[in-house]
Image (spheres, one colour):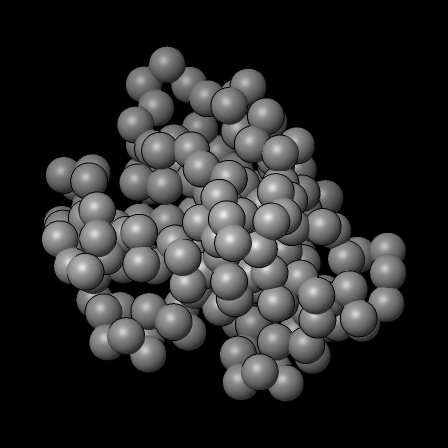
Length: 167
């Protein structure tokens, strides 16, 4: 746990442009954390490895799919992963192996964040990467939400066990 974070665990979800997968993970995880009543113990954000969409809201299809499940992504805005994120966050969570490689490749020497692959928190699903739904139809966004809900539940359980000594 980063001592500068005042006892809060800081988690950053990372995908390509921060308009589909990582903002969806941010929204789903925030929803789970709020429902668990521990929003004062966990800070959540998302970013992209590329800056193509900085300032943009999540893809409208991602927003629509999430909203059907009671999760509002409309306030999230895309941003790019920056060197300071490697020390400000306790966890950098990559949505696929390509992001994982990019995060590790750009890791500064003073990095303290744990770098994790998102779907490792849901091994029972048998999927390594959350696929990019951007070039597909709404069914792809629904599938991504299914995967993210499973991964987010596993991540929350791991954080509660490792960082808060629960369960």
